[in-house]
Image 1 (cartoon, rainbow over the protein chains, first blue to last red):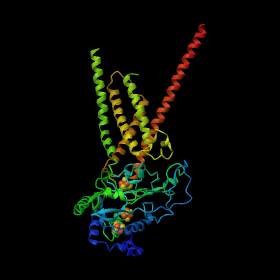
Image 2 (cartoon, rainbow over the protein chains, first blue to last red; image 1 turned 60 degrees about the vertical axis):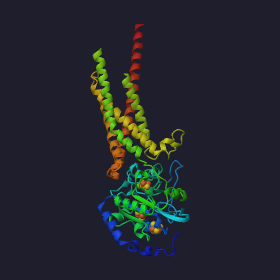
Image 3 (spheres, rainbow over the protein chains, first blue to last red; image 1 turned 90 degrees about the horizontal axis):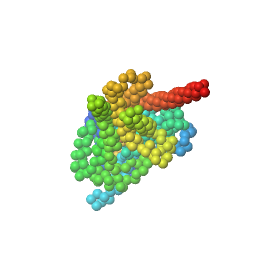
Image 4 (cartoon, each protein chain N blue to C red; image 1 turned 45 degrees about the vertical axis):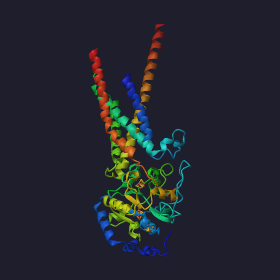
Length: 321
Length: 167
Ligand code: SF4
Ligand code: SF4
Ligand code: SF4
């Protein structure tokens, strides 16, 4: 999948040095937008990606210090059916999402104008606009920042994996043997910490763009204010007669994939499974809850009205008597 | 007990039971402890199902709370003052509703993010109010049962003694 001449050599020293090759004007524009703190989105032009995996390695390099360092042996967990999830011996794995790999390249073989073509797709957290992983985390370990980033605080997460279960793409990945649960009741509650792309929040806080975007030799990703990026995604899709994924999925995300082939075709072709998210359309997971929350506002009025009706009918009965 | 009181009580017990169950289900424990493996209880591990159910029963509880309050103060036949038990339960239920409302607000799209400390504190407070209410209700129930039983027994004993002396 990787072309013969890769740019891995640049990564040896510092990613930042290698990144200077990236288009500086667009980088500067994006960095300026990042500083304003408004919702930021990314556009991923699938037609440009060569699958070189530079982004994958850049992500690993800049985020290495955030990766889990579990102590072994792991504490026993009860009941016995609770499984250990240990990736600490497979930190190099890049064929799927893991606690040590927050971005990976999916590939799909598709028919474009009668020609078989392989498309490669960088996959990571979509950074949903109303992220269920954040909203439904019972401990507040999963948080959303003003600029639309969702991230899991590894100092607070107990590793119950609810965020993974409620994520339509099952993105967060667990590592056993690290985190706060070790200090509470490791045998009975929690099972480590969940990890996923945090859209390089610390780099972005410094006004820098995420490493995977900066390193890409093909400029596959573009980052900037959500409205602007969404417009760009539509323009790009229109120019290639293509399709967008991520605009409406799960009620809207901050990642827009643009592809020359329909996403259901891509979804049929890609390998799916644990740590390998699908590309199917996704309804808004939080929609029912949000509607019920609105109905909650009516509850006090209904209660008061019920009592008023009873009071009225009782008074009437008394008057008749 | 009037029919109104009976219906309100029945709804209150059902609501509180399901709120407790679905509330606990917001933590990933029913799957871990294999309770969801018990036939018929699989839904307890479905976060979106229990989340919606929790909201539905919360709507019922809020409606019921407002109904009972307004009804209590508008029913002129009830001239009794609220008892300390009522006050205690009102504080706990209000606590549940207020912390719950703040959590529901947090979950709405576009709400400014709460800090992790506030989220965990709100959840812990919500849980504490729930546990307090459950334990308090249980203790009251036991005391009532015990006292009523004792009174009945005492009065039985008394009448027995009386009849003995009368003989
Ligand atoms: S996104 Fe860019 S860096 Fe990543 S695999 Fe595609 S071409 Fe390579
Ligand atoms: S894609 Fe999944 S992990 Fe990422 S923000 Fe959305 S729900 Fe959360
Ligand atoms: S944004 Fe940062 S954390 Fe996310 S995939 Fe890219 S490099 Fe990795």
